[in-house]
Image (cartoon, rainbow, N blue to C red; front, side, top):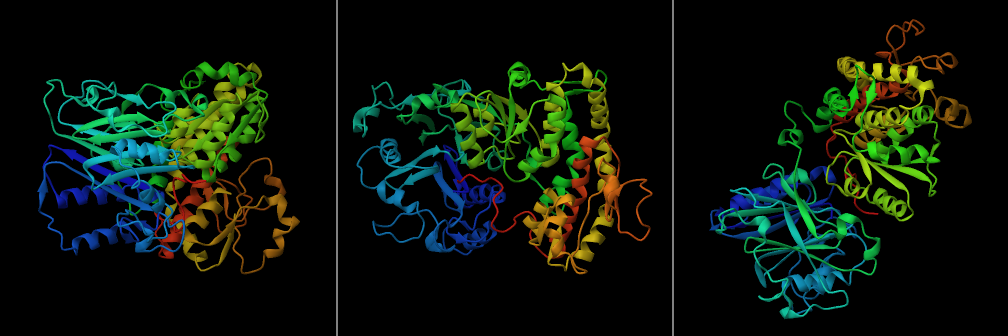
Length: 596
């Protein structure tokens, strides 16, 4: 599934209208993940709201306790349609095209308690999944489970929690089906009120639970969240939260977080303002204009410009191991992959360690992901962990799978530019013991000090770039790696990033008088070999007077590429807006790719 949201409230009077609004808002917060269906509606969450408003249900009816579920998803089999959506409830005849219907049918065969029923069914399943189960046979109960796909639980109470963890209850090793009486009162795993949700006075108090695939869906309700590990089964009933664990044959290969006896309730660091558009027309526009602040936040507390020292606290203890490694491997997808390509050369120059994509035991592996939940990257992470590699994570999301399962890492605030800066700081810290590179390191750190102001200066050229976008918006194709990706993603124009030296090896045959070509030629070591056409440095007198130019400030060579990409971000944004496309929800794409 692309986005799950469930809302459970106990001793908290809510009307149907209020509950449905919480559900719809939870789905809306996860729209960026990509989907083609929402609940029983094919299309966007806005369509689901209209369908709810036109229904004959009494919206003012209230209830003291309730559990409700909602989701967004892709139609993995068959076209997007009402019959290809969840939830599922009628009969044993398969009525839809969705593969998950098999789970709903399978779970009706056993006559057990709700939790044991889910345990029994999950033992029959393979692959990645995240489920929220609700049943008319178990009113006001919800059971959730995950394997491979992300899932978290937000907890909201009027009073402070007594402790900040929930104990994990382990099932028997060899029992295929758990006995019905195994959770009856008097048993060690009886459904007693967990101390984690009992207020200090011990009296029953109102409590709300929010189950979601993404923290963005719960942050407006609560900042206290609990992240489920693979094969965790969470049971919510009567205001109580229990976490059970399904034992598997490969328990020895599980991460320390998975086999821990407790699940910690953490406090989210993100603010509601971070997931709102504010004064901007689109989220993409907001992300572009927030890059100066994001870069500053990425460096804050990590770069001392007085002493030219870099301190990445999460890596400090592992630096000796990384320096002894024979190889450093970057593993990433999409934009994260491009930030690895862009920083590979400076990483090798500073660390004097080869950077590649080969696997070996004596190496360090760096995993980059915006969401921290990219399925392909997580598979590679677990492969490397099993083979003894030191695994480092660079992610946007604290608490994500990659941030929890890597040995160490760096948390950043935005995508390409912050990843770029984080990798550069990593290389600088690893090279701090190389005296011969002191001058080079000081040059780069001086460039880091100036880069936020230079980004702001590039953003001031937005009107010029908007005019350029208008002039090329009618063309069918563009040539330019990261800039080309952004143009393809949101403007649906074919765009290809090609190295200048490769033009003669085939791509030049595509060029004619109708083909727009954007050439990035700033004053680096390759500058004398070509003539710039569009994007160049300020003060470059070698540009023909009649050429269309986008002039960016000149900075240290290893930071120039990051500065150059910002005009391409603006260009792709304006191209999509001119064509009338939704830049925040490009078709067929998901921000968090959680399937293999």
